[in-house]
Structure formats: structure tokens, C-alpha cells
Image (cartoon, rainbow, N blue to C red; front, side, top):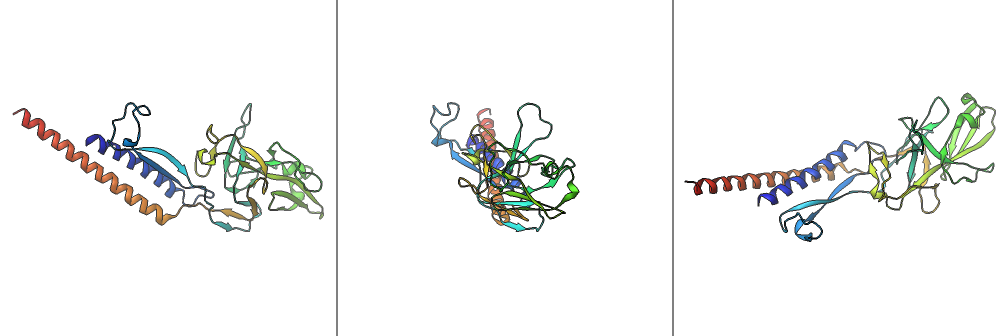
Length: 274
């Protein structure tokens, strides 16, 4: 009985931790909610879990991330991008020696740094693909998008930027000329649920997720890009609060059962030692 209660407390604590993280990021752009998946220890064979006693509670099987689309909210800011459909924005960590380290996110709130690079709010460079003179995507290897270089070294000569659903960035200069400077690269994963969460909506790849494959938006089943909009989190506050209440009740119930078992054991020991 006490082992069953202990596993119940552990499972409920893990569930509460996941729910709390969902609630804390309910307003985080591009955040995807997670849920804890549990299994009965009775369903685990002795060969799979040799240290587990059969039929003595529950354990956390997995933490799964929901891939459902969040609400796309219009911001009318030209450097805000949302993905409608599958895929992730890829960002390169700054000042990483050797092979580049990428992180992935559904948050497309971009800015332009002093060097003319399109970056996220933490200064990580947005990855893009090269385009031809006619705007067709020609590149296959992701590279940072440098607007300053495309503008001939003068950011002030850029009048506006437009980004089409396929992610192609067209720069309009103050003299009225236009130039396609690159295309936003979207990352595709074989198993996106296995990406490892970092902070907020930022994730990194794992062995289970597979390596990122960068393509243009709209290609090979990837989503399209909407300029002047951001994707909100897919957290339903009401549903999460109900889940939290259930998890708290499960925790309290198992705690009371553990206390009752402890009192019964103490009483039995006292009776035997009289």
C-alpha cells in the first residue's frame, strides 16, 4: 500500500510540474503545451523493469508535446512571422565555435541587429536559404540572412521588407528598386514530439527527433508563412486548471493513503512489542 501511494505521489508531482510549465507559458509566443503520460506498473513485465514490484502503482511513461496549431494573431509588424502548418524556424546560437548549434521555435518575433542580421529577441540569427534573381529558392544549405550585405552595406537604404507565404524576403529600397534577398528556412523533423524543450518556446533536436531538414515554406508538407502575425501558445487555460485540480486531488489522496499506511504500520509494531 505504501509503495503504491509513493508512486502515486511521484506521478501526481510530475503531472503538476508539467501543468505548471504550461500555465507559466500560456502567453508565450509559439509555445506548445505538454502532457504527462502514465502507465500502471502492473502492465510492466519483470524483464522490462526488474526492480519494479508488479501491481504497486503508476509511473510516468512519457512527456508528450501537443503539435496543434496555436491561434495566429495579427500584429501588423513587418518582422513578425507566423507559421501556418508544420515546421519550425531555425536559429543559430551566436559565437559557437566548430559546428553551428541550432535551436528551433515557432516564435517568429524578429529584429535586425547592428550587423544587419535577422535575429530573434535573444540575438540568434534566423536561418534562410539563398534565392535567385527571380525570387526562386536555389539554396539547400541554411545560412543567416544578412540584410545589410544585401543592401550594399547601408541599412538606411531599406524602405520596407515583404515576405511572401513561401518565405521569400523582398527588400524595397528608398530609390524604389526591389531585390529578393533570401528565403526563410523552415526545419522539418521526423519526430517533432521528441524535440527537447529549453526555455519558453525554444527547443533543440535529439536522437529521437532526428536531424533538422531545412526547406522553404510550403515545400514537402511544410506550412506557409504569414507576415505581420504571431502564433500564440496552444494552451487552454480552463483545461489546464481542471487538470491541475485533478492532479492536486490525486496527490492529496495518495498522501493521505501514505499517512494512513504509516499509522497502521506504527500501530502494528507497537502491538507486537507490547
